[in-house]
Image (cartoon, rainbow, N blue to C red; front, side, top):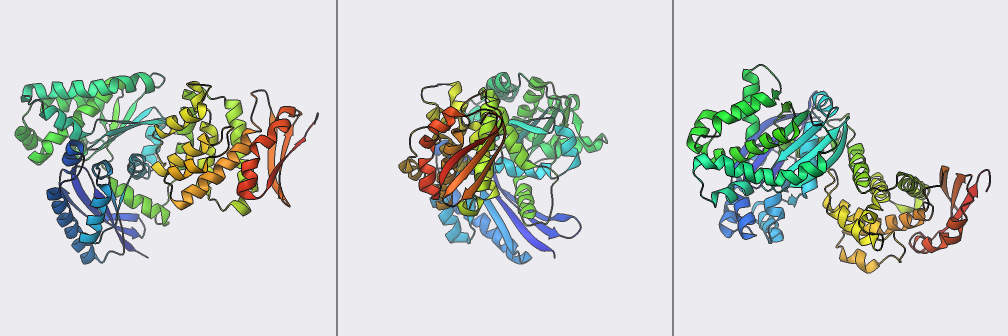
Amino acid sequence: MKKLFAAIDVGSYELGMKIFELGGKTGIKEIDHVRHRIDLGDDTFHEGMISFRLMDELCEILKGFVEIMEGYHIEKYQAYGTSAIRETVNTNVVLDQIRLRTGLEVRVLSNSEQRFFEYKAVALRGEQFEQFIEKGTAFIDIGGGSTQVSLFDQGHLISSVNLHLGILRIRDKISALEPNYSRYEGYVTELVNNELHTFKRIYLSNYRIENVIVVDDYISPVVNQIARENGVEDVTAEMYQRHLNEVTKKAPMGLARSLGIPEENASLFMPAAIIVSRILSGTGAKRLWFPGVSLADGIAYDFAERNKYVASSHDFEKDILSAAENLAKRYCCSDTISGELVNASLSIFDGTRKIHGLTKRERLLLHLSARLRDVGKFVTLSSPAEVSYAIIMGTEIIGLSHAERKVVATVVKNSYPNNISYDEFAEQDFESRDYRAAVKLAAILRVATGLARSTHREYRNIKSAIKGRELLITVDTDDQLLLEKGLFFERSDTFEEVFGLKPVLKVKGGRA
């Protein structure tokens, strides 16, 4: 049965709403798109908060969106705010005013959630996306406050980093210098190059990038027009650079006229175009693809996928695990220890499934916690718990929300020898479900670390099963595990307190 759905994006430089028809042969079909320019980011990035004047304008525009939704008899909608609302000091006031004055419930996306929605919209395009990422690919998502660059190779997500190269930020920084048009490109180029220098040295040294995928609001329509005129689906780097050289010397009015875009958009086109140009130069990529998707598309695709209107052949969970795997390698985590820690943790999780009440998603968070537990040891062996927490919290993992990343970091920190600090869990300001999940996952990981103490251990299998008031953990190995048996009790107290089960280690094997 077909259903209408509205996706609303409260962005840094414009508000957008797309109406979609869900169901039928296509699964999802766009039937209307309205957008309104409003520079919320100017207030947030300059003053730290959204002014009353813009607040009034924002609510009036959203009221208009509500009227359109009523005209379509929309049954379901989702509305999200991005960096302009996320970074303002009066976020809760803004959201409350929107709710009271328009009736809309707007949720603020973390950066990683926002990028994941836009990434999902491209990934659900299917075959073309999968073909691109089989070779080294940089996925560039250009926003008002920042730009996200995600690297893929052999079909897997390698890493993702957020750069403070948002087109609003760049435009406002350069405008403050009052450059004439002949110098504008040079200023923007230098600013972008400074930000990209460290990124290239750290993230690109071991990868060859052949393709670039770009998600943005201003370059995509122009480049796709070039592609249509040349009879191709994607454009070459040479074609892009040649066209850019023709337009970057023009003043905004001339630029807008030559590109067929509103003059107010010309000042945002230039920073976006130069970001792409410098990444092409820095990577040597030869091919570009501008899928032409927006955050609203990602919101709709996410809703449609969760409600079974569309299906994706792409494994997004594998992307998350791949990114974590590469993060662990960057910080020289032992593959042997972390591999056994993952196996032990997931075995305990599966063996206690009937009593812990946790979901498949929380199993994924445990997997990540086990794999990333020792990243802090790269920096210090004296206090790895605190450093591991800081590294995880400071690393974008596309596909995880900020709350989920905080769960992983807190679980890792509390898996180290001292007892779990319930005060610290409370200080994290978790939602009640996240609080309960974090405590349970930390208790599981603490027990699992008792089995992963040496790089010389070889476990053929680890099984966990509840026997009365005990959790029997059976390890199939030729080692006697004398150290593990002797110190196992150190890690079992919190587990017994949380689950009401006493973990018991049993070894079977040739020399057990």
